[in-house]
Length: 132
Image 1 (cartoon, helix red, strand yellow):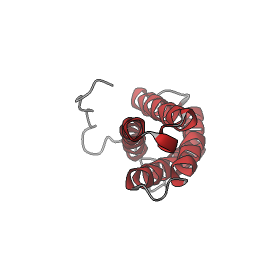
Image 2 (image 1 turned 90 degrees about the horizontal axis):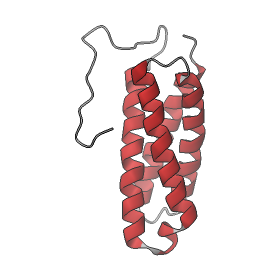
Image 3 (image 1 turned 180 degrees about the vertical axis):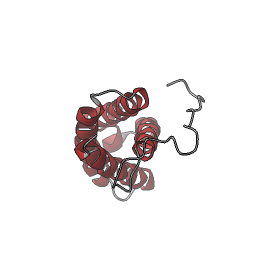
């Protein structure tokens, strides 16, 4: 996604609302985009801080999570029939990223990243389990 690009919102009443569920596809898209951004920002932050935050494992985890979140959001925006598969994978990667970030609980940026990834994991778990 191009920096600064704005996602078009469906017209009122045309959002991807799932019958019988509280979460819409648009909600999940927003969670994925928020997690993508947070992971990219946190990777930049961690690289600048150095030390354990900038370990190859941490930076790779953040990059992988960011990329999968963006890919998952894009699949839902396109209406891909594979979005549920990607949502399930995204839920797994976000949960792992949240766990890794939580190991640095004294750092507020890492705590925020863990919270954002956990929220995305929950949303993607729900979206990945929905019958369409």
